Length: 198
Image (tube, rainbow, N blue to C red; front, side, top):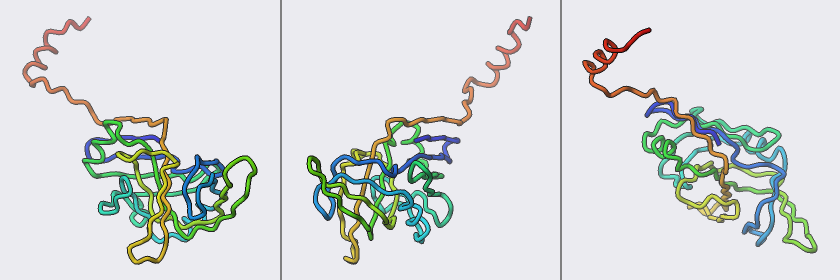
């Protein structure tokens, strides 16, 4: 995850929300406890079908920080997995980013098409072949471990939302905010006058 801060009014966050063909830690699913991997093109198909995908913090959908509809959230799938580029203008979230409080990514999925593969010595392997994306979330307070999974039913009872989270061990913060000298103007002028310019 890379966080670029451009003053107090803009931050750009980019990184991989989830890697395809990478086996998860054990997760709880509608099939019970399994190890899971998302197949290539599952995210690409979800992006093509999605109307608007929103970005929240810690899955709290009462405050939306970015969305695909207005291009403040861009989602793509490449050879690694689901990649997100986000533009944040919320000053409180920018302050959290500056302090290194953003710890990872998470996403919600529904309408999952999967295949279960029995394995003799291990938990079954769930291969996710297709899904619909409900939302993407930045993790600040919740523990961002891929095994931290919940299954929720939407308020209207129409579909189950499965959430997946993972920590990002390599969070890089680059602060482009100009640093200003708070020394009073007269003192700065005197320093310049008294400087030995050889």
